[in-house]
Image 1 (tube, one colour):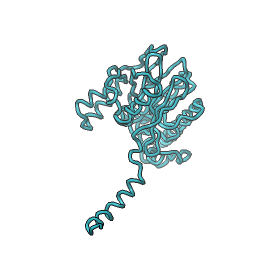
Image 2 (cartoon, one colour):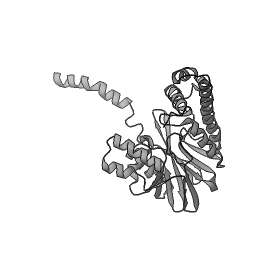
Image 3 (cartoon, rainbow, N blue to C red):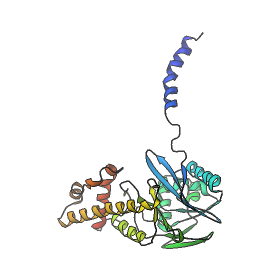
Length: 301
């Protein structure tokens, strides 16, 4: 026979048990590893409907990972996928954006040689120090080697170029290009199917970076955000759309500046409504206009 107190406890717990059974327990604990073309993969995770990508380049001597994503657990899940599917050790980690969603996972790569742009390292250290990261975490996440313009690896029969073309999503974005396979990994320099995030970005300079990316002669462009289409060469069209978003924003802001508009007036005028259905438009449109207005008027450090 159930006592009155036991019955009361059961009534209290039932709603909690029901909710726990209905909700996903850890929806972003791991992702999926997908081959793009032979020797090239992308590890993708979905976080609240947004896709975050990490590049995986396979050679005869091991693997290079591009961006470690946003936690030690996710990075270890990626490494387990690489170990079980590709069956090659990870030798290098190249990082582009210092933001936590792409660098927090560096902790899982203590045994791997890490490379990042000198501005990436500076931004990462500043972010970790302001966030109160422990000295151990700071050591684990920092690159072993930095560079200014480019560094080239001759690794496992492949030439792998790690390039910096200037300020874009951050001050220290890296691009990884494999000439023989005509594939470029762009991290957050490329938002595919989304309105770009420019909270710490430089939209005018970003356009010049995209021009340099186009000049590489790649056929496939791997985005930091967004799914990879079945035909990976279709990524070029999405890259062109990103470029058009930035071009339309720049041209609209320049027109407002020529008319003597203040920053607030430019924000009110440059709506970019042709892109309002893109994810993150509502959150990022004003941010982008303000950043680009400052950049165009020489007031963005």
